[in-house]
Amino acid sequence: FGREDIFKTVAFLRTTREASRLRFIVVDNGNALELSRKLATLASGDCQVVRLPANRGGSGAYRVGMQTAIDTAGIEYLWLLDDDAMPNAQTLPGLLEVFETEKGSRPIGAVGSAMLGKAFPFKVTEVGSCVRTWRGGMKRRFEFKDIRKLGDRTDDVDFCAAASLLASRAAVEKAGIFADIFIHWDDIDWCYRVR
Image 1 (cartoon, rainbow, N blue to C red):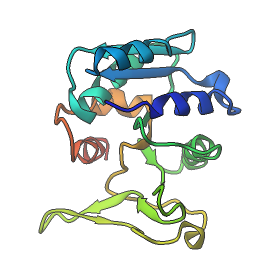
Image 2 (image 1 turned 180 degrees about the vertical axis):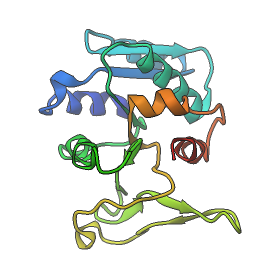
Image 3 (image 1 turned 30 degrees about the horizontal axis):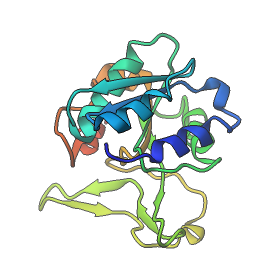
Image 4 (image 1 turned 135 degrees about the vertical axis):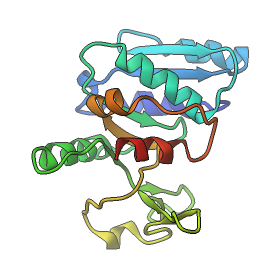
């Protein structure tokens, strides 16, 4: 909604080694006509643009995108990605690797990325978190830590941020799509349903 970062993200992902396996669903979340027209130019063989008449918030856009993906045959994983999240070349392979290496040892419905800030590119802004059920709120794991010092790791968390979350189709079919919450805690609600 209201940003054009998605053009860079789609262009970049089309250059990755996974490009031939990707199908994009871009949700135009009630944007002004000028931006909607620009977003419509993304539509092609590998990209579907779904226009909403009004801004339905992050969860509303994810709801529509997830349902569109589930209604599409042959999609094994759904990668939720915020319009201003910029993955690198290792993001999707890393997420897929967790599913592949953990397959059989334990059920996994979703995995998430470590998010780094633009102002401080090595500082973690968010990576899966835990909910403080007894007093409310959340405990952000590794917030402001240097990603280079954390090493290559996979941790169990209560939820993954929707900004970059890879879910199996089976998990989405079983848990359902995002609730219609507009913004905030929508990813927490969904991850709790998956767990």
